[in-house]
Image (cartoon, rainbow over all chains, first blue to last red; front, side, top):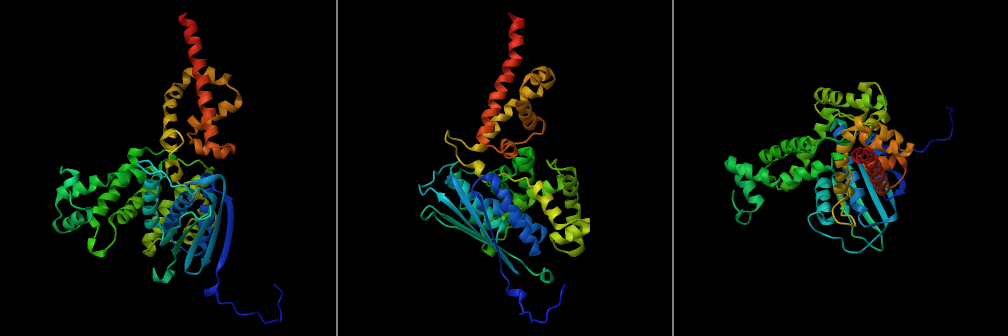
Length: 150
Length: 252
């Protein structure tokens, strides 16, 4: 590498926050792309094998729950925010119907309740917002504990 | 068993069980939450593991959850149980190293993951990072992640969404399995199979030889799952006709 005499501004690595944005059609077969991207980024954070496995379940649940009532041509924008101690994912799916979802034993409500339990078990925090102006936003985060403290 | 309406709330009975360790109450609490096990087990059905095996593995998690739950910590039991049940299901898949549909290299790597993770967990006293697993196996982090993805036995919950004709997509996928009976007698239908157009033969091979799900076939062919469903139904019908016609001809 060439040396330069110009002083390089100091970068505090503890404050670096990387953003990665991925846009895919909002369909189940696309979740593997979101999941794979999530795991590559999570591996950089040195999340444990177990935590990466959990994160993959959580990402799949969040994508699927968020895409309920999505139009066939809906798109899913996945925005990953990676800081040294945290993995965050914001999902925005649109267009999504605002009509109330059906309920019942096999209905959406029970499906979302199960997703809720799975997200509680696999992510550190998550939110699935109600549809607003045809767009549904959801969020999850997974904290990373420094190796020395594990 | 006590009538459902007469039961005290779950939280109260869990608190009572934590104090008394009453085996009847334990059995009741386990039985009451078996549905949670079944529904979580359904999520892991895309790799062809028998549901009974998955439910059995998940039930171990449920039993552990009932036995270990500490109501004084203020957590919801369902969240705690979901964690332990998922843990057992993940362990089940990891330990079994079931046949994954990927290149031999990825399959071999996948099979190395479980023992490596176990060795490293014991060595470090914590779950290893992906980098540590890759270093131990002597491969790249990307390869480890690729193997994890190939072995991801998790079914998208979208399959549980109700379809336009009622029931769920998962239910409709399950119905196709009755066609296995026909293909089970494949020795007798080999001549009929040979008469099918190449595309339909490929479809039958993917569904019944490689045992891919309709969703997986759809992904491979780049078409929708509904399209695969229709193609399969049509192909199976023509195969059925091909099998029956000579039989009817012989009878007449």
